[in-house]
Length: 329
Image (cartoon, rainbow, N blue to C red; front, side):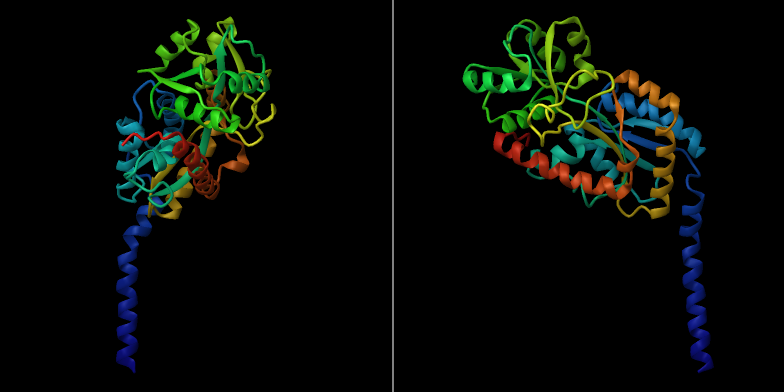
């Protein structure tokens, strides 16, 4: 009996010793520089957000947070790298609508599972999408637009930065909700699409609000509706599609932080808390306001909220994407 008890105690001691490094590693995190993977090119909206957020995170965490752009395949290359990384908290992803919602339907064989291959940290921000039309289109609000589109859909065209782009899929969802089928004209970039809209060669598009603000303010195009959950602080007078009758429409472009699956809960919580502290910084909030980026409300910032949000986003985008026949494989 004594021998058995001694063996059990010895085994427990060995197990405890084996756990010390993991416990120590978690409690001391971060003990070295961190990498924030941005899955799109430098200068993109999500890249600019990362470069505003990372200095404040560095201050709070006490370690440099280095932004690394890992581009390709609509953002899925960078996201896939983080999904396969070790669960030590050394690198994390600033992902978003494209990497975690569109990708699960656009690709026949996505390189990762958005729900199960990541540890969700925090939903950070949303950029509103706006419906803009050529300045001589005879509509002034969303209901007028829908009536006009239903009567002229065979001749109308809308533009975007390319097949599968955020602006393309936003208009796909809008068209589905409005019950119209309009020809898509893909361009090699948002700038070309905007130029053709200004010239009257296409009828409308659905870009991020900051991209269209200058043209809206100059009267070069007409803003019809925000395709987002709420009005934007940068354009408080512009009503949302929800307010104008499409009560379920919300195609905001969102950004969130994700760690690899299996990352210890303590590390997830530390990164979450640091990010929330950064988001609550008046200087950071003011900078994002200038960019037309809306930080999410406190009640939408928990890891569980982000997990449920991603699941709902995947489902929300799946139907319209499948119905449109869009496929980038």
